[in-house]
Length: 327
Image (cartoon, rainbow, N blue to C red; front, side, top):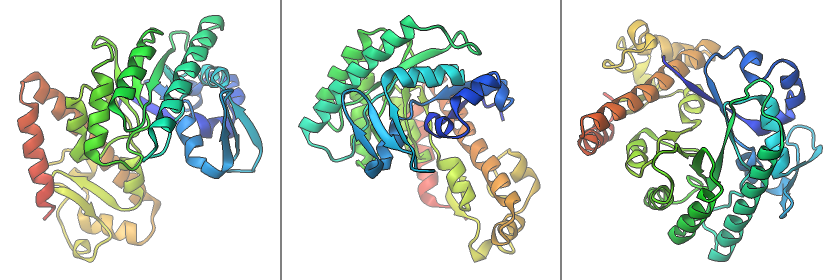
């Protein structure tokens, strides 16, 4: 399908099977036999989502494993150590992600802690040896600031002073309205170097991706194509299709007649509906293949629209088709 970059989850790999084991196996690329690039997150967002199982201090985050209740301490230095052992191509510094809504005082405190942690990560990166399996590994800093545009701009400017190879915008898509997400993304991106990658974490829905691109975002990640595929939600150019629904039990058409993926070229909605209703694992596999192809194809179309200078028109037409819904 032309995938060039995968995201692997540091928190989960740290707990199971463990970063030491993965390092012994030659790093993530060899461990899972993936020849392309790999990005690892810092684990901060997963720990944020644990809520009752973690405590954040200036030193780091003390948390209990959701698997066995064991206690762990994740510091900026530990985040660097773990990701170096994993051997990803792009790694993330540790940041503090907060909830929405949050008071200005809370957002300011988290933004300040994020800068301090980024500085400690920078020092650990400079002082330590490169990843044994990926010596060219680079680290990105993460902009925080809650729902306050001025805090986002200030946080971005201070992180730029630390001179990271790339920057991410974090702490968004945590419950705030889409308009706020775009406003915060635009505020952060406007203060980040245009010549360095700008990565927005944890987004987005197909209807929203072009909006983030217009804010100046280059990279995004999201669980939606795979998670929704496992739950029978398929993406089409005319909106979401829930394959378990009764009308598709005898529908001979593909998921999306304009899609060129292997699933749409070969299988009917009726067959996919049968697989899902029968709880066949093949349903998840085929649904995932289609959804990933859809997202990759959407990004290809966005890049093409940028090249031809008609991103706004493409976005409007795409949005109109989504609102029409699948037939």
